[in-house]
Length: 392
Ligand SMILES: Cc1cc2nc3c(=O)[nH]c(=O)nc-3n(C[C@H](O)[C@H](O)[C@H](O)COP(=O)(O)OP(=O)(O)OC[C@H]3O[C@@H](n4cnc5c(N)ncnc54)[C@H](O)[C@@H]3O)c2cc1C
Image 1 (cartoon, rainbow, N blue to C red):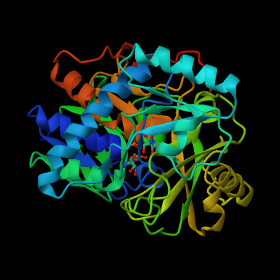
Image 2: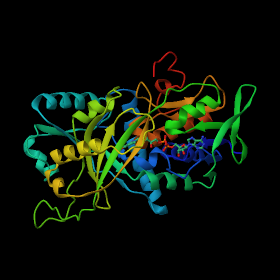
Image 3: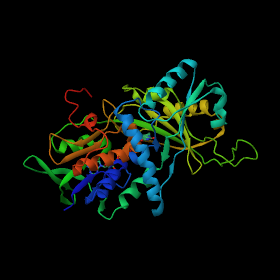
Image 4: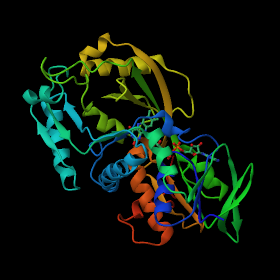
């Protein structure tokens, strides 16, 4: 019998398994689909501190950025995964926006975020192909990018103490005298010392198996992918070839969109090049349930905003688009920790648009709570029973 069953082989479940096993626990990860077959395989890999207001989520993000660097360096021996600490550049459309951005950077600094003010004249040094006319920006060296699918697979494989069962749907929880004692699956029961709900946007359904509510809702996002671009955009003819887009680049409007509670459509392009040469243009946000219908107007809006940032993209073809469902909680904070309503059940879900970035810290925190060790960060803001009476 494993010490822990983790439901969900997404980025968050993978990180929970990794850190729990690192603490010496035996773990079985169960997923009805494949590794990264949920939202992890249909989003982006931004690891951002730049887009978060000071508070509990930023505290998680600052620690998680550091953990990502450690994980990437540890995984290098086993083949590694893409982790590019390239930094993020947030640009301001006007002097007024720049003032707000600068104030935000000042406040973030108190939480351990490193920032560099970038004057208008310096923008081209960071991004030679950026459109003219921006009032300046802020550079965030801690922002990074990972390829989450491979990262999730590598973390699950890291310890022999972790067993993986894909294609296995959890249909209920085993309960004894009000305590969760394992999971019921289509392929039989798996008793365990504890169960971690890392079901992402489906985490509410897993909680419901234990008779408790979590108000997790899907927030749809589309991503546009360009054809691969040759790295032939050096700053000078003598310089080494460099990608068209060198950092993560987005406008300050993105921060407002991320924090918004609106159900309606919001788009503000985040543009970044991948190692494969493609440029990822993300992402839209809207609450339309689990509707996967491709929306051309949304894609057109993303494309236009990306061209507004990098005019050279006007001549580049988009080769595909995809969408995923962010696990949205009404207060924009993830649900992490033991559920006081049901002993034996832990949650690690509801990370909305930051689940890749926050996966390592979530895994670490969950492992600490499972073993009764002192957590690095106070888990109180993320407690599962905080929503009583919250309208969805
Ligand atoms: C367009 C878009 C862009 C994004 N960009 C970013 C970004 O740049 N940076 C970032 O940090 N985050 C980003 N996100 C958010 C991020 O992708 C998610 O927060 C993250 O993937 C959540 O991971 P997870 O492991 O919690 O969930 P998932 O990856 O969804 O994993 C949950 C798993 O649980 C399994 N499961 C559910 N129910 C059951 C069951 N009953 N039995 C067995 N298995 C079950 C599912 O099959 C799934 O594999 C983006 C999301 C979208 C949609």
